[in-house]
Image (tube, rainbow, N blue to C red; front, side):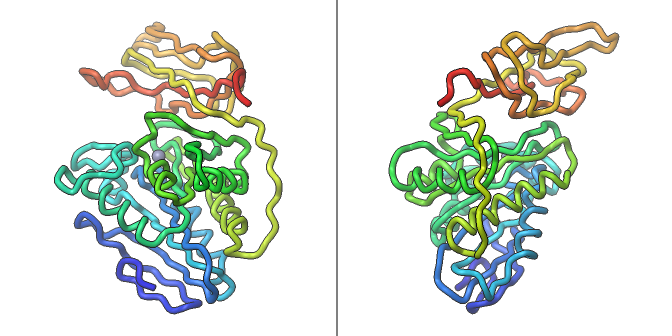
Length: 322
Ligand SMILES: [Zn+2]
């Protein structure tokens, strides 16, 4: 078995690199002694979302290759140039890689990386998990997303999501996620999952645990490692989220944490000027809602042009869910 520069015999684990788009990407790989699934898990495809990286360290420190069935490939920092700049996107071209899969070999760096990464994953993965968080500027609660596209891979993705153990499972048909890798791989027949937890520009233990336990639970579910799964109460099966944007530059003030339950019209936060005057109030536009992600950085960067709106919060409408 060869992944990147790593050659593995049965029962071995190794550290190495994957060279894609002229970038050295750090990986850890474990190969079991028995055949089984090949689970790919990547962290930091957004360069400032690093709880998943720490979660992967823990997963590899927990499992023993000798009792593993199949193989685990952990891509520790997928978007290296973004990570080096501690940004969501690469400073080379500032494109969000998880919105432009399957990529394009004839366009700029992030397009090339997307193209080469998708091909690499597809060449060996039977299952795929993508670990995310809120990065430097947002806080995100623990939830999972799978592609609800019909077909066997979607059903298998849902089973992985339920096994992962998050209290919120988002079955997504959202068009804005059409070019996320998890969506395209599911369409190609590879069951796939996004795990979200963390942010605020810090690594909290509870979020590392959420990522590590999600991966270990998916491995138990797939029969790769032994262990029983604790049934999770999914208290919010959801299909889409409402994004609420601020349109003014200033100082962002919010009294909430992600995970707060809000009603229609409740104040999410406000944008103030340097004197403390309120420039804009952001209010919940859903019925009964849960704050899935919340901006935590205190000041919104002043930009010009069509990118001036920045995400203030996203909420899940709990009213119309099933
Ligand atoms: Zn992300």
